[in-house]
Length: 176
Ligand code: HQG
Image (cartoon, rainbow, N blue to C red; front, side, top):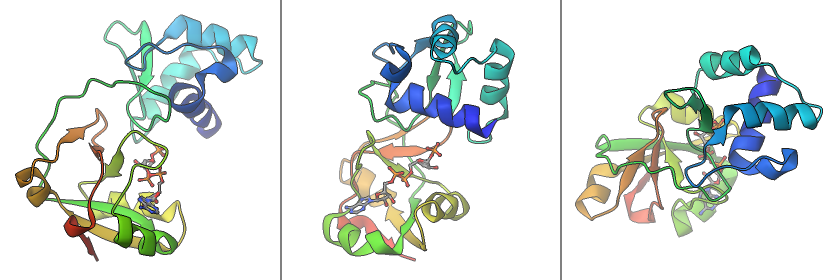
């Protein structure tokens, strides 16, 4: 299951061309075409296996369209897609987990989106901690989202509850 989820992340977020797949402007792939491209690339997956990955993924990384004919990743892309999310008002505080080795750069430049489309923020310290530990020794930052909203920064919430924004200047960051 994890292997299939990673494969879907690769083709739906970062590198659809590795299996000859095309995403539309909003990041959707045709479900049948995805399965056909996977099969042609020697990475065959059945529709039932694909549905199981989408349903079982605790982070809801992927979503089918209502008619199930299309599938996309909910966030995390490096390829150019326009997810067409509506701006949304976040909780007053959001959290970002990172590794201690990035702190000097972050506290000099603010949070930048790096290879992704947005900076990813969490509504809970717990989720931010899990995200941060992926990178090494955990460092937690509190983001003053209320002040950012007051100053005109725009936030989006992905379908799986990840808060997204273009960048977080240093003034809104506090080390926890
Ligand atoms: C750091 C996972 C130096 C940033 C997670 C992070 C999330 C800077 C790393 C989603 C910096 C980028 C995203 C600066 C930011 N200088 N380092 N100025 N600004 N950074 O993986 O937020 O499993 O692109 O702190 O659960 O860790 O893929 O972002 O450590 O939701 O579904 O640069 O990815 O979801 O790392 O994680 P990432 P992230 P999935």
